[in-house]
Length: 214
Image (cartoon, rainbow, N blue to C red):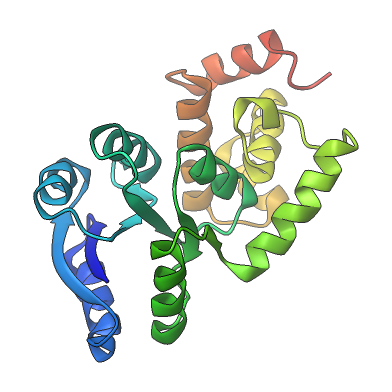
């Protein structure tokens, strides 16, 4: 397989190349792109079998890049690699047309095996996430789901938004959910982007307007 690696950190690109290096008979990294800005030109030029792309790259989204690449190169196999093991990211990736969603904790042998499957047209998903996604789909079918899922919010983002509506500060949210301040900030940035608003006040207004919490 000919693979192009896309990430906004040179260290991650180097790490993936090193991970795939021992499997030269099965996979070859033919190019890389430092961020979404370079990815389009590299992929269009090289036409690899697989694009292995990070989900989040600074201010860019691997999901948006996936959509743009498929518009430009229909049929291109794109496997998203992420640290986020939330099934809503998985659902978004599949809706964007990704050929797979794998977690960065994957080992080299398993990564190569999954890429080989993706190259044949199989949709590849981290095994643990696949089980949770099936359970989530069952809950959705029974109308047992979290507020804001129809807006693309993850379960955790929904919890953070509920606390924002309740007037909590980032520090108070972190304490209640037992997560770090930076993690709260990341969730807030993500839900602002998904709600299409610029600040916390607007996010609260959007949540109330959309009837997220009734």
